[in-house]
Image (tube, rainbow over all chains, first blue to last red; front, side, top):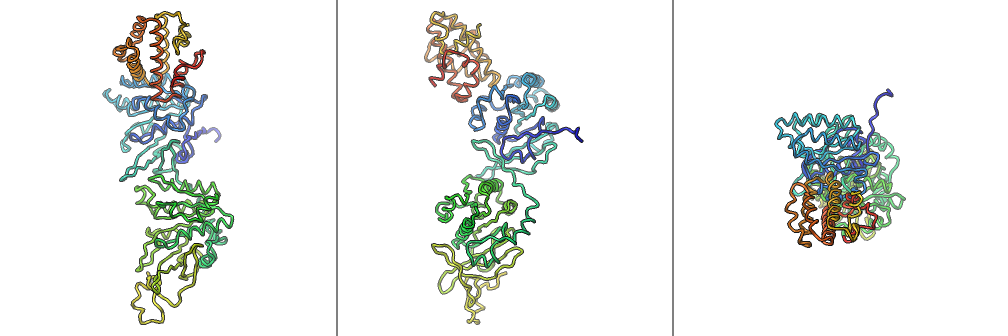
Length: 497
Length: 142
């Protein structure tokens, strides 16, 4: 038992990458970083190198034929992680282009080995690999030569206790490339382009002995370098626990009558969807929800996905944000992924230890997502709701809903089932006036009111009023007086399905 | 001994060889310094890049020191420092010192324009910074 080898895992220094790798990078592993030009391979390699290299555990970076080193150094130094002082101390760049040009892989290997023996690096990078393959293909028997090269390199580096990276361009992933078999790890970078949007994605196609997170993970490159948006870890035990505890503990919405309609407030940890047509007062309800939290000493987070946040933002919310009791997630970054949004939300939730979250609105959220994710919007939403539920927060989401008086809908996405509670708002016409009604449609595992109540909005917010017991057909938008029972047949859509 | 001298001579050149150095001594010191520069940079950016930068520096410096004009044409796949030496030997010592300094400075600035002053300083530290005669002229003028 105790004689088994312990594989150390290196922290890569790339935010989110260790999680995706399943707990860091195995020491002495032999890895490929592959992908088309411009996808961030060299940046990823540099970022890991600058994070991992120390004078005691130095790194060797072999530049083969790809990008000229002058260019590479010119552009890589733009990143925050690039530290000129590390060079020639903990990091050594070695150019092998002349050896590669000669086309003799044995000579290239010999140079690498000589340098590795001289410097005893803990980390070795070879950039880039396709160049080696091209050079070798002029030798008649390319694949044999190449496989031999990679196999020997892998074996040598491992025995020299060096964690090694081959940076490669342009592999087609379907190719049964012998290199893939030799490698312990295979990190694939992609750029997914759809219409005008571009999303960077990373996949760990292989990492021996590691419980990697499967699938494509989005990442972004900024001046700080690469940031990978690992999917939020979902605590499996949390939901069941939350469910049982939730009904005992409820939180108030800031509108006493609405709390009554909900059966005594919203169960803690629930997600509630507030659906209604434009201008019906969803954001104001959301503001009341956050303000009530602040009043009770709780903190909140609001994510706005509106085009003009300053114009649409409620003053009450602005004050709460100003006072630091509500955190704001207001990203202007284009082409967002669900994981990035979840990460932004989670960071704010953790920072403020928030218990209330508002997403205003789902329609804006959908537009903020890169087109490539919109097709899976329901799935994205599910992941968002699951992640937030896992964090134990209570979530209020608003959803723009076209008023349709012929049927009763709660969300345009068929996502209503995802949420634990639903509040719906509608316009109705009574006596030549446009009035608003509100109803609680659903509160999972809890009794709630079935009343349709009038409400009005003024400078102080929402005021919930009485029912209209003498009217019927409210959901049809044009209610009729009950006494005029002979007119009943003209009511449109009185019984919604 | 030579190496020590070549480091002292790095820049500003006249300051380091002493006023009474003749053109031949200056040329030797210049060539030795270039050999150090080549040794420092070739492993990192490759021989071709070093030669290309050197050739460009000669070309640029030739417009200020006409006697150097045309030297760059002989530089193809390697630096051909022998040719540089013979050109410098034919000059007066003042010309050689001034031209040599200008060439180092042009090269330094050219590299700095590509990879930035701090990385340039880092890569050439072994050549330049060992000089104990104060900060190098290159740093003051860039």
